[in-house]
Structure formats: structure tokens, C-alpha cells
Image (cartoon, rainbow, N blue to C red; front, top):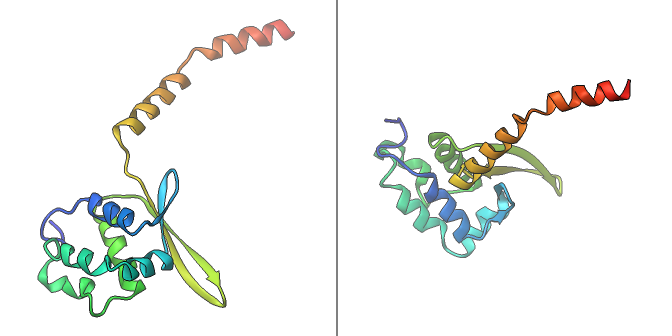
Length: 142
């Protein structure tokens, strides 16, 4: 299956965790940054999340999810690992604040049935016979 995960993991586990910690959210993605990491510690949600992940990781990879050694870099690694395994799109930017750099991830929402329907509608709109109308308009202008 995977060198990290012994059983299949769903992206919903990560998304539910991000909802639980009230991670900043836009219309298309979650923003995972130092604030999200600190908030997860403050509301005591990180350790239960890491404990839940133990059933998915191979025992040789428990060092990634050890709550005693967790820091923001390891938290980011866990987020990336889950996104990569589930083929969830994310991107990374660097934020400069008070002479320090921090990593900011945007975790995009997976496509849903409503998103796919709207994409299909856009495709069908693009296929309208508008070329014929444009040709006739061009002929009228001449």
C-alpha cells in the first residue's frame, strides 16, 4: 500500500481536524500556518489527532506522530503526507514576519458532486455554437 500508511487514510480525517481547530478557511482551501498549529495545541486537539493517526501509520514511522516531539515542521510534514497519499492538492508559500520565515500551506478542498456538476455545466456552456454567430456578426460589420 504505502511505506508510511498501513491502512488507507481518508482526507476527511485531516479536514475534520482543521475544522475542529477552526483553521482559517476560504471558499476553496484551508490555510494551515503557525497560527493553526498553535491553536491546535492551545485547544488540546493536536495530541488526540496524533493518537488517532497511529492506527494508519506503520509502527516504524511513529516518530512522525510522536506527541512528545511534535513541532510545527513535523506537523507540516504530517499534513503533507496525508495530502500526498490522498492526492489532495496543496501549495506552499513562505511568509516573512518579524525577521522570521514561516511556511503557509493552502489545502484545497477535494472535488464534490456539486463541484463536478458545476464544472460539467461550464463545459457545456463552452460548447455552445457561438462561432457561427460570431462569423455572421463579422459579416454584418463589413
